[in-house]
Image (cartoon, rainbow, N blue to C red):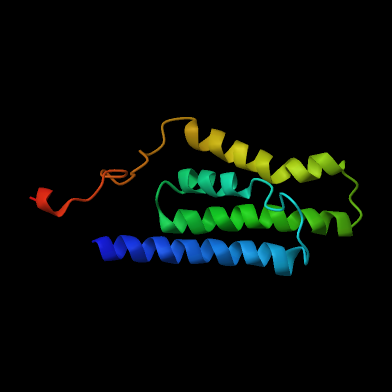
Length: 125
């Protein structure tokens, strides 16, 4: 079990490093302070939105990615919106999705029952 945890941490860290490199090298082509701009919080809300389902996570990532990609497209087509409104759009959509998920009687979160508890082999039943 320790090997699986270690492999998951290494793989997750490598993917986060690749994502940061993508933003710095391919997306902006330069280093800008605070270039991620709080996108980590969007990722955290994506996990809550997905309710621990990989397919919902994929759908949510596509939704948030499309919103992010729509911003430059709107500017290219001549739609004139205030700059700060455009910059807050991904976060506003995140907030709206979180309110939608939290409202009403939706399914339970179905998070893993032992989330956050350390695995100790001797305690196995």
